[in-house]
Length: 333
Image (cartoon, rainbow, N blue to C red; front, side, top):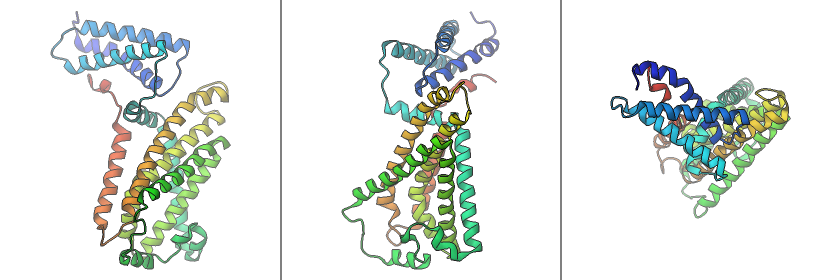
């Protein structure tokens, strides 16, 4: 029988959270050591005992539901592992494994974001100081057209260049961007230097293109053109950078493990998870780029496209920040 409920929660909460974290790590592909398995079993038994002690208290349904869910997950994990029946579940990957892995490795993402922003600022600064460098800094010939002329051509065009080929276009965008992302991830084997250089160069290109259109007074066109697919494509590139930096960090000695091999074994499951997230985001961005981004006013209002892109970015941010969290921290003050 529980005499002091608050004391019961304070005593049990650390072990419940520890079990929760071990479940998250195990589900993300981390293989538990013998010592970790023993600890896992102890935490599972303790959580089960706490659930039994909680009994039928009707004034704490949220806490009881949390413990029931925690014990059920631990039971399923024990039996899946013991019977060798663990299989890939897309729903679990999307709803739990990917966002939890992203948050657990958030430091690498922050570094990737900082490098990309630094590249964007550098590119914009160089273009602002030397407009003649535009042709050198922009790698794609189709983007060298004067922004004002490009906008006029796009808005006056009556021909649908992707008519009958939208699915093919979506596949091309997805495959091309995935190849670039995989290259960024693989470049992590250069101790992360290759990944950082690719992120920086990608940032330079973004900064140059953005400032080029802004200086030409075509900001609305720029946002309406890039936001719909860029809201997921750019985060996908950053996730690729996050994965590449994890590889590089493991080779440099960052993280747990006495040897590079040990550290790589620990990060490879997370790298694979982030790679899966990259693919999912790029498939979606390729679809949007083919079916929406290439259509401009008067066909589709820029405001509608900008709002669509902002909603995508907001939903993606909320997904990565909140999905897969557990209410352990809300049980008691």
